[in-house]
Length: 220
Image 1 (cartoon, rainbow, N blue to C red):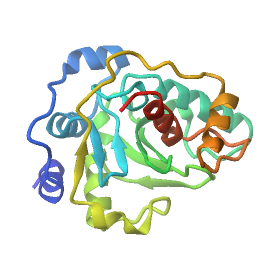
Image 2 (image 1 turned 135 degrees about the vertical axis):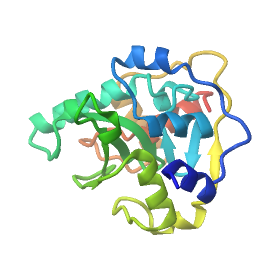
Image 3 (image 1 turned 60 degrees about the horizontal axis):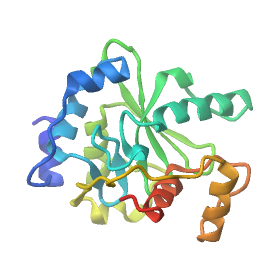
Image 4 (image 1 turned 60 degrees about the vertical axis):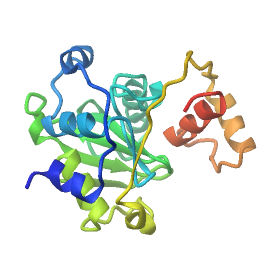
């Protein structure tokens, strides 16, 4: 049984998902994508597993969860800055491509090596507000099956995740117009603290806060 078959048995997909022009997506990104990811995106569409793990999708409802949006570039820059500042990054930032985010702000990355063999890419997860990294030696779909079935415990993830593992929450609408967002991180931090988020001033802004900010400004 393939990992996508295991995942659909564990966590049933929605009735339909929007079609994806993979040639256009890969041309935009400049590299081929893993086949298991294409199957995953085609079967489930945009949304969240266990209402917690949001896999980026070419039809992400905002640019912050769009595979071809601004987050991958922003994360490359952030990881390079972290490495230059002496903060631990276990892989060359150029070999990491962000493919998802949790509602706590952890990011899921492809370890893109070898670059020309996407079927061999493994998964890394960072800590939202700390230095911890976790590596999973398998594909993204393998990772989801293992985590949602309880076979793999990711230290950064909540203990109760397995209780909601059999539910996928689709995101099927896109804001009718681009959402105007502040670009000054100090403004974003001020908004986050005013809305009850614990965000130390010297840590990066987790994607979960950006998503919340988008939603507060009319996104979904």
